[in-house]
Image (tube, rainbow, N blue to C red; front, top):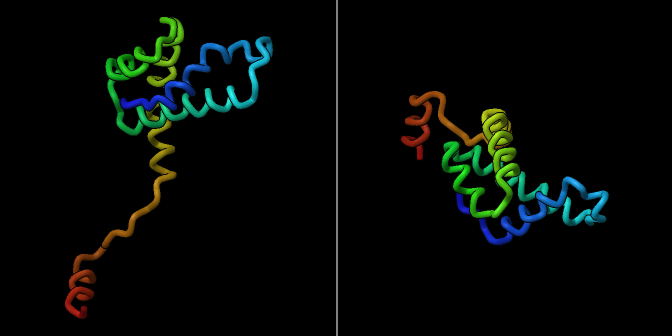
Length: 109
């Protein structure tokens, strides 16, 4: 999964978000962490990447083993549901339901 430098920076806030209130982390840091996590999970789900590929993708982020395991578990438990939701949100492209109608339209043009 290609992760841009911006996404890496956003995901870099994840280890600190657990104690956001205690560390006085700003709203922007929390928003960037959520955006990074959303990107990671949606793109991984879109591509239906394997467990190994997901682990390889997050390994470069330099998180602790515990956080990597948590992210992997989150991905594996939710990827089908995320993919389903993404399918529902995708725009419906026009399609032909009747080939005969399509031929009639092409002949008249």
